[in-house]
Image (cartoon, rainbow, N blue to C red):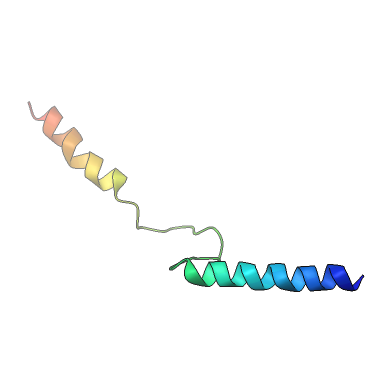
Length: 53
């Protein structure tokens, strides 16, 4: 039983170390209403330009 607890503690410490070295990691879950996607606005002017011809 103690081996399981020691193994878990080592694994948890290793996981926290790797996550802390990973940079900007967002563990807060799925975001709704995030406006950081730029694909849709970038595609709109291209569609308008092709319709103007």
